[in-house]
Amino acid sequence: MLSNIEIRQQVQDSRLISDFNEGSLKHCSYKLRLGKLIQPGTSILFDKTGNQSLNWIQRGVVWLSDKVLPRQSGREFAEFRLSNNTYVLKPNELIFFQTKEKISLPMNIAASYSALDSIAKQGLLLINASVVEPGYEGFLSGVLLNFSSKSFMLKPEMEIVKINFMKIDAEVEAKLTESSGDKYTENLQKMAQLYDKTFLNIERLRDEVADKTAKSVRNQFILGGVLLVLLLAFSTIEPLLYKYIWHDSWVPMNSTYIEMERSMQYQKQMEIIDSLSMKIDSLQIKIEKQDAKKSDTKPQGRL
Image 1 (spheres, rainbow, N blue to C red):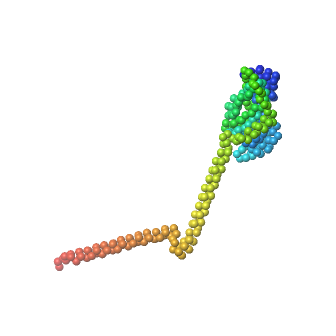
Image 2: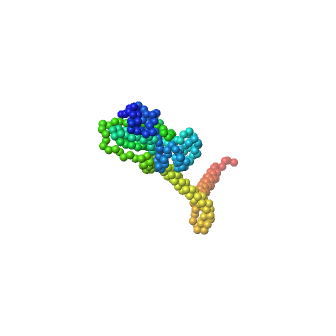
Image 3: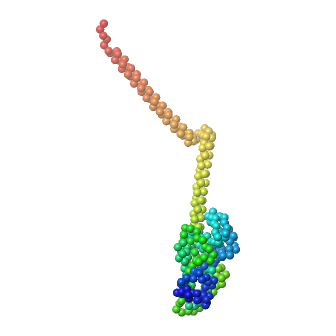
């Protein structure tokens, strides 16, 4: 693995790293900086110039530059105030990035790049850490995922990944084809179109669940409203139906059945009361007759 002295020497001798920044060089690695960002699903491109930032904001991307930008959508973004151009990577969101630096590897040097520990501890994951083959010339790129519960602020030219350089035992046979900067970016934009904005398509799944729930609630509300209208209509027209159907065609309504049942029960109760009254009268007559017999058979006293 190359030390910082060897890396610096390679930069001077063979332009190992373009746009080299001495402050990004560590003992045995170099910290690559953000150059461009590409939003998944749209291929919207941002670099530090920010010339088209207003169009991107209107399409759902937030770039901020010394001013407060109003909320564009209820789900998307709130108001922010920042001092530099900044991209807000929300939780579970993905973003493609392209490095500011180009690398130019000799035929006997390979490289590998991975996420910075300081970035990873904040919940930012580099999905595609990789090995760079000997002889490669061009930019590097990757996909970042915000695994944290808070938004992550990505600023232009911030250090985002580190690269290590390693010597191999022998030179490789053929040099890799170099892709120009514009062509590399175009290919990266095409790949970004295949991705969704959020990890595991959470945002779209959330919207689908919300839509299905809203439709279900709306259908139940409509059904309940229809039933309520029918009940109110029935209670309104029942007296009319009773008048014109029951009296004319002798077809009783529910309320008529109830009245008939109550009348029959009352009639039965009155019959029972009459029967009991008759029995009581009969017993009274019998008692009076017994009393009369006792009076007739009682012996009279001496004169």
